[in-house]
Image 1 (tube, rainbow, N blue to C red):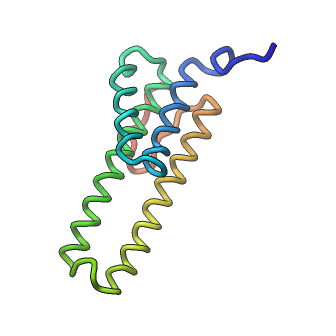
Image 2 (image 1 turned 180 degrees about the vertical axis):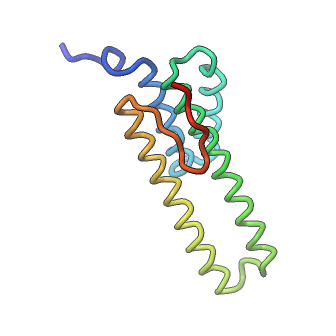
Length: 132
């Protein structure tokens, strides 16, 4: 009989993987919805979950908030620098979002791989070092 995901691995590993998947869902599939579910999961389990899960939950929530802030700041900067009608502005928009969004997705995939391996993960520049 094969072992389930809860029978092997670190305590909290399933919740850590779920947090990372929801982070990627927020970035790639369902912005807002993925974040809302991630926040619900965070507030429900932050005090009772094993350290590995809490680490991944904290990292993904903080990274999601920063991703939203970057999106708002970038849009405000573009509007202040001439709006969306200029061809030069669109070049900057495409380059900026491709670079930032791709970096956030890549870090999310790295976090997911760490969660699947049962290891903690800290987002560079964005995350606070996890205890333990």
